Amino acid sequence: MSKPTFDRIEPLVLRWKATGDHVDVIFRCPVSGTEVASTGVAAEPAPAAVHHRARRNLLTWLSGAFKKPATADWLKHKKLEDKALQDAIVDAFRRVQSQFAWQQKERRLVSLAATGDLQTDFWRLVSAHPVTDPWDLIVLTRMIVTMAAVNGVIDPAEREFFYAFTTPASGTLEELVKGPPLTTADLLRTSPIVRDSLFAIAAVVACSDQRFELVEGHELLAYAAGLGIERDRADTLIRQAKEHIVDQAIEATYADGRQDPEEWRQVEDLAQQFDMGPDELLAVARRCRARRGIA
Image 1: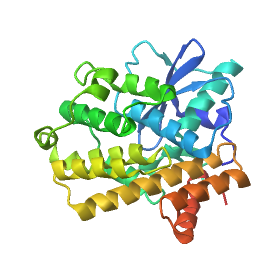
Image 2: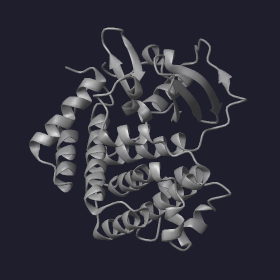
Image 3: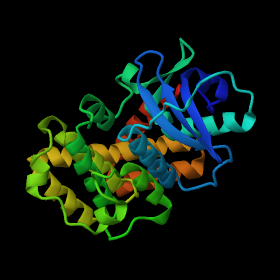
């Protein structure tokens, strides 16, 4: 599939709610029934570096995946004629497009849950072992805020995502940034089956700014020890997190259905930052193109 259009996206739209200049949307896969929440705006976003777009899309996924919106007052989707609203829904889809694949034979979009071989290892893990328990979600929130603010601050442009992610139980964003670190006791209260998922999501947030600094590595390894994750397993999850970020960056280069040479150079730079070899990068790119239905 080339550049996403409203006609191709519309069959996925379950509910939506327009507020001011943005629209919140629930997309539902026609095969698996998987629902994905996102937010879009009608105006074309200002051009940004590939890794910034990939990080924005990651944060959109986080805020939608683990804090389900209350949709009782949202409109069930009906035929839309409003072009601005259609454009906003397309923008919302672009932000979560990597969670869907194009089936050429059926001429339809489906969620990755309906595929299998087109997912990254990170997606497979968090899909197989989703974080849903209230305490697990509190711990996850504290982990990702810590990783996002590893240097003591959160980028002002990203604060809205983390505000949406916090709850009264987890504490405010300011409290989380300034609060004490998670203890081993806190980490061991989590459900054993989702501990790899907790660690993997924290690792993806750490890697999503295109760098993986020494302080982030130390923080993650401390989480691994507290969660009872062996060092070899932690290293594997970090490597999978880096591959996932590269995968998302490649997705961003195909946002308009074509790949720009300058953007591909940004992807190559990112892969080098993460010690990913040329063959590994090409394998990730092939999977991404297959997901998008691009030969």
